[in-house]
Image (cartoon, rainbow, N blue to C red; front, side, top):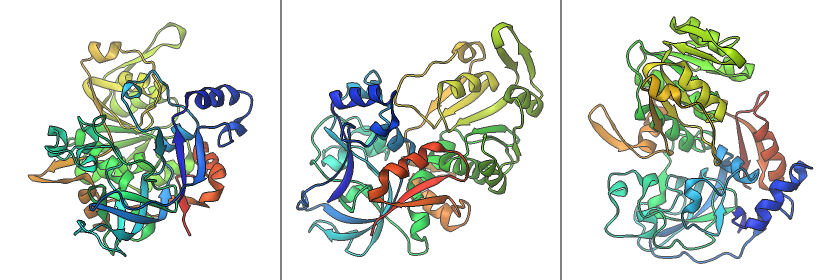
Length: 399
């Protein structure tokens, strides 16, 4: 099994972070904790497991954080016991090539995508499952650090991987591979919007027009066509695509002034470049999650407004928290996807996103802008990190 994984090796992590200040060539070098190797193939771990041959796999923000060793040992999840290796690549489409005797819902030849990639009760076959898993919110599993998961299962960045049957979702025949590989990020965007759906005539700001942001604005308009969506994005190509996909406006010029113009808010400027609005957006979806975007977002919201954190960093961020209490804001976190209750119907984020893709309510045409063989992973990560020009989604093609 050819595969890419991140080795949780503190000396390698520290050495890479230190040497990267001298040269970025250290990323993906023999010093780096990211390893591209060939591991011995292994049998299915149990009767409920399957083997999947990868077709396409996309690079996401979490993969970039691992490759460029941006995770900090001081973040909360670093305190949790974990696997010594994090196999990379969870945006994928592949075909089942082997199924265990207890697997009745998948058969060789089926196209699948990966839904559950973090340890949870179903993967570990823990009974009874925790409350969060029972409700379908597997990313919030309370047994995340309990029990054990078999080692060296692989993931999307490899020729094949092993998965518990509960981790997979079947891809309908009418969704081609180029769209199937984007079901997972589409599910993230949909879940994010349903965590705080936009209201009628609400002014909604989407920060960032990458894969997630472009889908967030589509989902916001699909859930409530009568909301007014503004987009904040620096790259012209992405701004234009955002408008084609349903954004009502793109913010131009100084963002504080632009938000004030769009919402009728009052802009005040203090010493040392300090700026603040009274009034502002009803709702902000932050698809970046940097210190600067959080800091600005909470100043751009009206009193009682809602900030939804979709983009995130694997290291601590800093922002001025006074608007949170001074304007009684609400901050809402998003952890990938889960179970949705929408218009009296309950279903997984994946099933709902698949339906919306089939109905054309989520348009994924043209999202894949760059393709690489797995052997050229260093160049692929470099392109994905640039986030300039005509770059949206970079994928690996498996032969």
